[in-house]
Image (cartoon, rainbow, N blue to C red; front, side):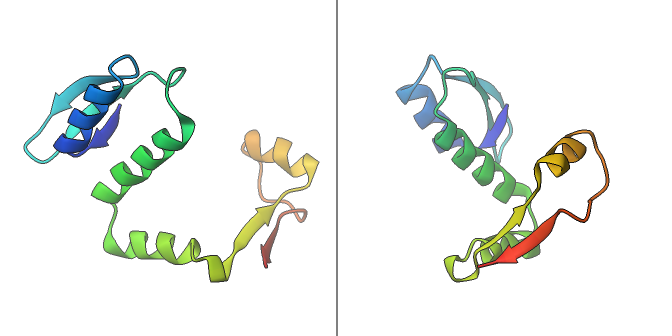
Length: 101
């Protein structure tokens, strides 16, 4: 289920009824069931970001937007052993580094 605006949910249901189904609604939002195996991954990511923005604080959205600024490209790099540790809930190891390009 993904939180959406009423008009967004209506558009999704009209354009892709096999992918999206109506969920419950409130006065301010509507929820959409998504069949992930049929959905476009990029569209789902956009929907998730919009849903997050509906409930996130202004400070959190500003921090998120600033981090996405192309002039400040930042990424985390993991060595192969760090990937395994991260998925098992391990602590950050010395192989994890922040790179600013």
